[in-house]
Each structure stands twice: as structure tokens, then as C-alpha cells.
Image 1 (cartoon, rainbow, N blue to C red):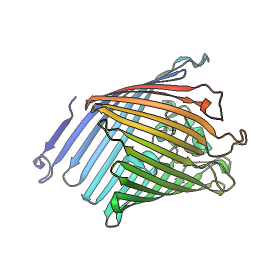
Image 2: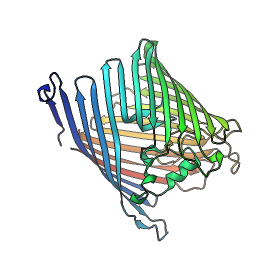
Image 3: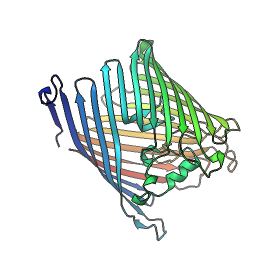
Length: 405
């Protein structure tokens, strides 16, 4: 379980050129139980990195996994263990160039998240330029999503996206492997303020490149633009405050326009004592269908906002309190209380806005750099809301083991 590092002198290649190689293998085992469904995922993830002496570096990783699922829903054709699916995925492929301390270019498949983390988050294929200037840091990027694995990308912006996302995938239908074809461009400016405070501004534009032939115009393409602002303030050494807002403009295939709003408020406090613990309170907001002008917030990446509750930020209000502690250098404890509300009035259930709340806790133990064990569990309680107060609690358990070679 030892990583290999080689520093080869330039004599083997070109005079004056030196580089370092590093590579390894992650073996990951994950188990999840939710209601009457069991999931087991076993994966191997090789990775490789190369660092040159002239500002160039390369990182490549992939994954090959078997996914097993077991159903017990009373439907004969579904019950039992399903045939395992062999899934290959290119996780990250990034070439980075740093000609100086204040400038960086990155190309390939790498992680990106917008300022608020509302519109886009995850791995994307593209190009990003970053520069540290006298008036702050600026970043310009462009990405394409059509080569990503659909389950990782989670792009379900339109009816066409959701239809393709729900289509079963196997080797005979390889086209169903890929995510919705969309292009994304962004410009971000991080402006430092006195006292270690920062102000961040970002503009994003998303373009739908899918083939929408045969669909009604209103269900076809959806282009969106986002404007975001966030301020991060640190009134004391242990206290941090973040506040941000988002405005979205969208145009569908019929040439119809609409707008959406989003908001974020976060307060984090590092608690005194020897536990290295912190408490974070967060409020998130995404607009819903209000009228002909304001539509439901439509993010590019549609990730669930709860550990159990499946709703995305579209038309959702979230209130959460998170506690994290490290009682030992090898142990990390995290707990979360979350409450979910609807930010629009559903004609089918007028006056009912509250989904309910969930509790989640997880424990991670990492005694060695190349060994990690995790355990988590929690439940969502519809009875705490007004939308489905008679619903049964929904629970989930998961466990994981990761070895690094």
C-alpha cells in the first residue's frame, strides 16, 4: 500500500528536464440500504499523476465498478438480486499549466462549482483560465457535458433530459450512458475586501445542444443564464458569515422567456475546546412556479438537497444545522438536521408548503492514509410537514470501505 514516486533526471529525456511520476489504485466498497432496496457497489479506481519542472502537470483517474441491487417490493419480476451492471467511467483527466505564480490554465475533465454551488457542480469537460491580478482573482471557463456519465452529471433540466435519464442503460444501448448535451461558459471575479472578507461575482451561460426533433416546442431546448453574487465575512477568528443571491433568465424552444431567483445565508462557528468542532446554520432558497414571469429555478446539476429527501433546489427552501467534530485525529463525526419547504403554491394541494425534516449522522475512521471506513444513517419524517403528514418515515443506512494501494 505504498505510492510510488520517481524523480527522474533530465539526462534520460532532454537536458534540463526533470519530472515526477505518482500512481496508485483505490479499491472502494459501498453498501446502502433504503426501505426495501439494497445496493452494493464494488469499484477499482486507478489513478496516475505527472508533474514536470516547467509548470506542467497531468492527472488521470478512472473507475471500473460492479453495481448490485436487491429489491423486495412485492413485484415478482423485480424481487431479488438484479443482474450486476459493469460500469466504466473516466473520473478525471486534467492537464494543468502554470507559467507563473499568478496564472493557471487547466484543460480536460476536472471539478467545477459556481460561486453559490446552486447552478453547476461536479466534473466537467472543458477549459479554465485563472489569474491573480491587482484588483482580485478572475476566472474564465467553458465546458461541455455530453461525454459525462449521466448518473454522475445529474442533468435533468427538461422533459427530454428526464426521459433520456430514465432510459435503462446497458452495453446494447450505449448512447444512454451519456448525459444531456449542453455547453456552459462562466466568468468569475473574486474581489478581496479589508479584513480578509471577500466579494464574489459570477456570470454563467448555459446552451442546450440536444436534438429536440419531434418534441413540442415548449418541451424542447432550454437555454439559461445565471448572475450570482456572494459576500463572505469573518467578523471574528471563529465566526464566518456568507450571504448570496442568484438571478436566472431562461428561454425555451418556443422562444418564451422566464426568470427565477435563489438565495443563500450561512453562519459557521468554530466552537472552543479540544474537539476541533464546528456548527453551521444554512438557509437555501430556489424559486418555484409563481406566475407567467417567474418559473421554477432550473439548475444545470440537479442534485438532491438531502441525504434522504430527494428534492432538488428547484422550488425548494432548505433550513439546516450541521455539526462536525474530530474527537480523535482518525475520527470524524458529522450530524445534520434539515427541514424542507416548498416555495410555491401547488394547485393540487393549496396552502401546503412543508415537506418535513430529516436527521442524518455519519462517522468516518481513517487510522492510516490508505485505509478509510465510513458508516452513516438517518431518516426523513413526512409527519413533521403538511404536504404528506400521514406518510411513513423513510430511512437509509450506508457503509463504505476504501483501500489505497
